Image 1 (cartoon, rainbow, N blue to C red):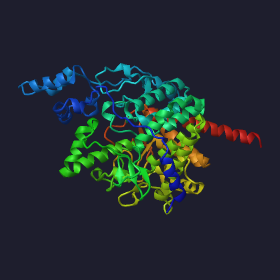
Image 2 (cartoon, helix red, strand yellow; image 1 turned 180 degrees about the vertical axis):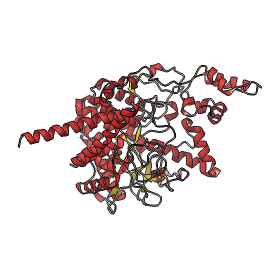
Image 3 (cartoon, rainbow, N blue to C red; image 1 turned 45 degrees about the vertical axis):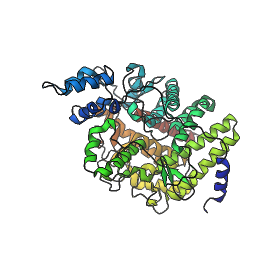
Image 4 (cartoon, one colour; image 1 turned 30 degrees about the vertical axis):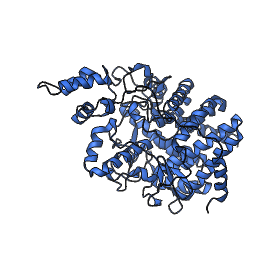
Length: 539
């Protein structure tokens, strides 16, 4: 047996009453368009009236949904009926903030210093009947078509907000996430009703740590019950007698142990991408469509929507199999979450709970090293639990264990070598080594992956490579800003003269996490420069 001591300790600790009951239900009458509008919803989304399906689900009904549906049933068969006119008469369509009267600063740095207020929003701006879930405090949105507070985006935004000394805004966003956990039992993808059914990568613990690094653990200890409840969402009460190979977010990797996956229980097209996803599913046999929609939604929960990482055929989205995969990113984040719970309980004076979560973190680390470390390629790899083998994709997710400080020095060295030889490009680090046309593939680079790569390398002393990546990325940010006067959602890091492409929508500007990471990388480069100067002066 691989883990005899750990197994005995797990059995002992499992008997301890340390779990929270998860209650994801809510009692408010939230407006959910695909549920409440019925045929009207599908007719509008299929009509092509809006280039972006998100437009209609973000529209606010001017009357009760039942009234609108009743009116539609009466009017739609009249000879002069116009669907577009009907929608305009019955819904307030979302508008994007225009920049015509905004004078953009010449330098990117000046722009970043002034731009947070343009991305800060209060949910009170929306009517009660919209899909936007009202939150108690103001928050930062990504920008462009993204007019809500996204879960994992917010961590990277928060890193920049703390550099900008927007600490009060950060504290309010932490309160918002606490509210969402209390309301739904987890943090939804974003504060929209059509996102409630799924989460995103669990970065709440990293948000708390970032704030605590500046203000101390006492400043975030009130969030401990919420963080513990989020952990239970991912573990789903962890059935100890799991007979199937998988149960919701849990997967059995051997006869005794579980790791986690991204998951969706819904088997229907996403409301915010209804027409496109319906067209994709049309090319599949009828009996394959339910699972296809589940895999699509699970990929959206990962944040990497979409990537060859989730495809059996790396250039064909119809081969998506997200829920068959045990991803290294999610399990690394859950290791960090367990570690953070242990630290917070220890700080609070709960030694039994602290030991429990530290054990869970240590066990997960051992399982990740057993099932996800590829010693031949020198990478952490995703694991196909059905085939019991690595997936074929080599991706930048390999940096997560370094970012979460769970790699050994030898593993970090191997990963560093691969990052430098295969993933490092003129504009930063590339997401994968496959050009599939999807946005989470080559040649694109994304701010969160630049940050996690840089921070992961710094965690293990690879400062020179970390600064090279940070400099390449910031130089690309500046170059694009000089020509576009915008910070983009993603960038082409392979050919810095071309724009990034791929995805279900055009490249967005704003942009919350890009701004945040540009600020913290700039600060780190300055700190490194100051350290070099000080070292020279002391010689």
